[in-house]
Length: 73
Image (cartoon, rainbow, N blue to C red):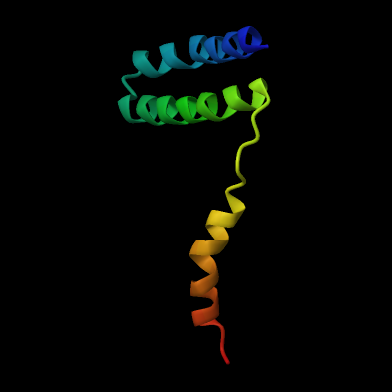
C-alpha cells in the first residue's frame, strides 16, 4: 500500500512540478512542496493504520475562549 501511495505522489510531482519550474513560479513551487509534504506526512501513518489525533480539539481550545469573550452576556 505504501508503494501505491508513493506512486501517486510521484505522479503528482511529475505532472505539477515541471510547469512550475518552466514558468519560474518559485513561490507556487514552494507552496506546492509544503502542501505535498504535509499530505505525505499525514497520509503515510493513515495507510500504516495509525490513528491520528483530530485537529478539532486543538481548534476548539484556541477559539472557544475567544468565542466566549465575544459572546454578549
